[in-house]
Amino acid sequence: MTNQNLSRRDFLRNSAIAAFVMGGLAACAPAVQPAPGAGGAQGSAAPAPAAVTLTFVCDIINEGHVQVREKWAKDFSEQNPGITVQHQPTANADYNTKVQTLFAAGTPPDIYRYLQEITPIITVSQKGLHLQLDDFIAADNYDLSDFRPDAIRLYQWDGKTFAMPRDYGNQNLFYNVDIFEEAGVELPPVDWEDKSFTFEVFLDMLQRLVKREGDRVTQWGFLVNRGQRPWASWVYSNGGALVHKDEQGIATESAMADEATVEALQFLQDLMYKHEVSPRPDLESELGGVELFSTGRVAVMLTNPSAVNQFRAIEAFRWDVATIPIGKAERRGTGGGGTGWATGAATKHPNEAWRFLKYITSAQAQLDEVAVGATTPSRVSVVTSEAFLDPNKPPKNAKGFAQAQEFVVRDPVHVNWPEITQRIYTPNMDLLWSGAEDAATVGARIKQEADPLFAQR
Image (cartoon, rainbow, N blue to C red; front, side, top):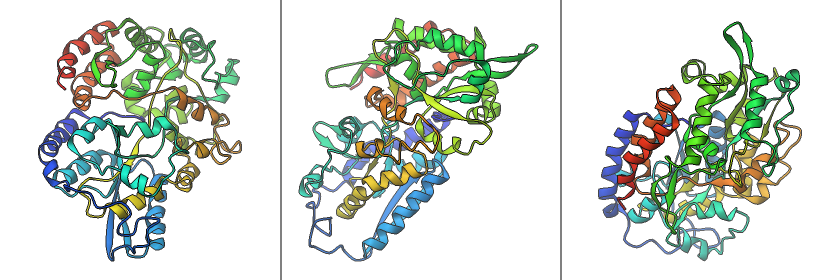
């Protein structure tokens, strides 16, 4: 299933490494960064130092991503004599541990895919983990205007920039067009401003899509994605929140016991246990979420645009994308924000790393990722391009991905957020998904356990 959370064992292992990082990395970071533009940065007359090797560490999202990044490394190295980019694709299960171990050793990646759910931007700022990019941007007069402003802001704190946006993702409904037409059910709207597509309308739709043979369901209506950004999208679209925050945007307390939040979560649980239009976690774990959709066992699922790469292999039926339903909120919200590209502050090659950062965040680089169907670009020119909106490739309503960017709600910002998520939110939400506790009980428990950690600043 997409948007999987770390296991508790992985979290505890990573936490031990992260604790070492936080305690000792400041001593590893250079006291003064080299002047931007020196040593061969784009626009400078100075040649690049000989025999520079940049480590480019990325997790393996899918084979398309690996191929694109191999191409970037190869092409950049050929175009920049004296600089070799060493691409190091890493299995998802090992990625966070590898990155944190490199930081702890004082040898951070020269460039890596930065995940704020693992290392919050406020922690990056306070601990000096990343190379600050503002002087490099200023020295090159690097134009940021083509990027979505909110995508740039995701990687800024206290007026400083610590990464560049890779994409600006969100959550969307993916649905089987053939199943809808066979059942005589109206297709869900793509327009994120549509107010008629409510939770109630969605439930009625799902009930008409379910097929049964006796007591056995042969075709489910909707797959509940238990990843945090997907389920949070229902909360946001009902006027709820994961946290309350101060004027700076830092989380101050849990909002999981709020009425609107509880109502949205109870709606999701009821889809599985009361209305029985969604498979329960045990079936999904056995068969796999993407597999359930790809084989026509599930008519609708919620996930992010990176799924396009997998779904384009489907030949048995037509599929498309739509907005998510709206509850009691005035405006929908979708979990997302994507990921970024960053450089460790202790890099020995800051100027060359900056040059490569510019290369992989260029419009052409984002078009390379669009070609393999695995991104929602952070550049406006790319997300509105014919290549991204190509009507000859599914989904027909790819414009919905771009419109959804206007409705993204960023993940909570707090130095303890990764710990709070893994120790408190996730295990308690598992009680909701299993049907062991209702949403009100789960929300109250999360608030009680999480608030003391939110108070630690």
